[in-house]
Image 1 (cartoon, rainbow, N blue to C red):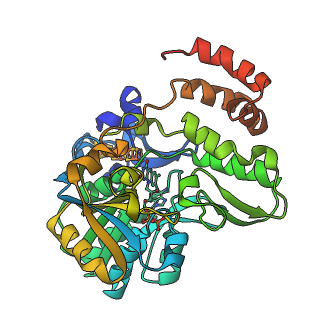
Image 2 (image 1 turned 60 degrees about the vertical axis):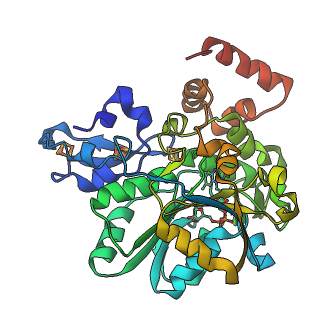
Length: 379
Ligand SMILES: Cc1cc2nc3c(=O)[nH]c(=O)nc-3n(C[C@H](O)[C@H](O)[C@H](O)COP(=O)(O)OP(=O)(O)OC[C@H]3O[C@@H](n4cnc5c(N)ncnc54)[C@H](O)[C@@H]3O)c2cc1C
Ligand code: SF4
Ligand code: SF4
Ligand code: SF4
């Protein structure tokens, strides 16, 4: 049975669900725990010890491409850059695939503001994939759907976190000429439960018109740690909590603090991120609307980037300096050593109380947090 399903190694599991959809006896099902992260759950009575779940697990191993070349990219259409997280690389690349009859897969918010992966040939749904959702995006049913499309001769452009792309490739077990992949430079994903409670507290459970983890209509690219929320009611007291959790690494998926994918060895053809370090090397290319860092990880990824000159301004950058200037192309985040205590507290108290203590800045919240932080130090 898969090593990562045992409790002591479980923190390495990134929730890609490759094992769940590969198990020949359906011994594995998807379990959503209190934090609402997805994990495989084993029914030992159905397991025949075939070992397939280990073979398809990307944490065990994955086929790696080393980054070939790096670029700074800005979409020429300012409206597209405004609607994107950084320089609009995803839109430029996915436009190419939509024009060529591909299904584009990526993360969208559903009606309840749960991040879920979906695939479509429609520009309208692709547009909803724009903007980073910094929570786990559910892959329920997605890998089998991609496989079925590919087996039926359809073309697929799959985007996601590095572990999601690596997981898809392990699940598929073989190369498909008609599959092209893009991953993001990845700091990790936060808990869907935290986001659901956050939205409920911020809106007093009123109707949400709009929510985005980043927004360039009201803020600049540099203010990336600012949410945008429109609803019937907005309770300002909790509005900053999402990024307090983000910056304090509370509620991050445990696998993101022991991640094997946040380095220069990628499972994808192309990697995209925010080019924060460009101001040190090519200041004249930087502006308030944002610049994408783009890595070509395969020859076909490189060929595609080379063909984007019509829609984007692109400069080739120094590969060593670009990689060195981006932490998440070198190592993963450390996480917060009190994350376990945070969850224990969350399970025993209301979301309101948990948010007030763990996202709060008042002296009282700090004092309330402190005993827990002292008790759990170095654990
Ligand atoms: C969870 C997460 C963490 C990130 N951490 C960093 C970081 O530390 N440093 C950095 O430089 N860049 C990071 N990025 C990448 C960055 O936020 C932008 O996605 C990137 O700059 C591309 O910008 P764009 O303008 O091309 O993207 P957009 O048009 O905003 O495209 C968004 C792309 O991200 C995908 N996506 C959105 N949310 C999720 C999700 N929850 N799970 C999987 N895929 C998702 C979409 O499917 C789409 O492919 C992160 C992205 C995500 C999703
Ligand atoms: S060892 Fe085989 S049967 Fe058992 S859980 Fe893994 S894939 Fe399923
Ligand atoms: S990382 Fe993916 S394949 Fe490995 S145990 Fe977790 S869900 Fe299964
Ligand atoms: S940090 Fe690693 S484990 Fe976490 S979502 Fe990103 S690639 Fe996956």
